[in-house]
Length: 296
Image 1 (cartoon, rainbow, N blue to C red):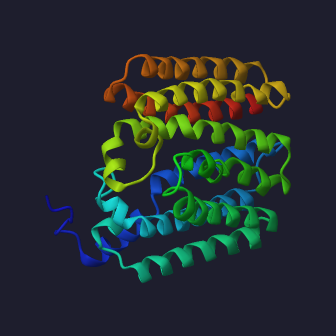
Image 2: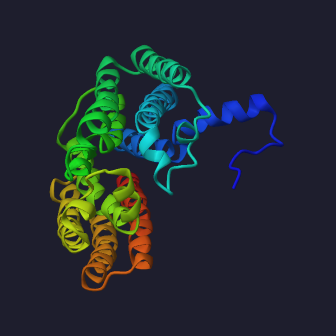
């Protein structure tokens, strides 16, 4: 099957390939979490400069990290059904071009954060870029089945970055937001890895289902989901939120645990896909409830 749209003008096609390198849907989720962090840190409205340039700067650096990731993993992506349509895997974007693109995005993002937000947010976002693009992509992912656990620290940073953009510090409340996503990441990603296990075998990546088997992975998903529910109660325990959030966290967490329990007791690819899908809804709804509680 030809994956290239031959009716698309060449310039538009090229620009779209570079855009897709940034993994825009994941960037949007990161930006959403960063904005939640901003509003939770603010007593009232977030200053418009921080909201606009902070979100843009964080998003640009995230896009730079994803672009670098696509180029490093282009050979792996080409062997996986889920990722073989990516521009780098198809060889439609040159390595020098993509690296230059990542450099421009990262430089622009860092400048915006330094100029319009604060140095703390810039340095934390740069550290997040290095953590994802280098520590996770280059070092951890091909080396250990715990890659997604350790590397999840980078993915958990956006709400903390948003908080730092407004408060210019990182306190206990910001660390709680980080911790929720950090604990959420393993059950979220391992649900995907279960029904994509053949992809990871072909790619030669030491993901947990490949190295330890689906049974151990399903048990880990259940245990991490229970830990996630406990972690999600921390905002209420430290008086960061009220009863509205507590009820939402328990309800959302109860459904997630039910999915994880069913997955552990009786596996199917369809159930793993539904668990993965619900995990995305869970995170968005949980942070939405936290923000609604904060405003009320």
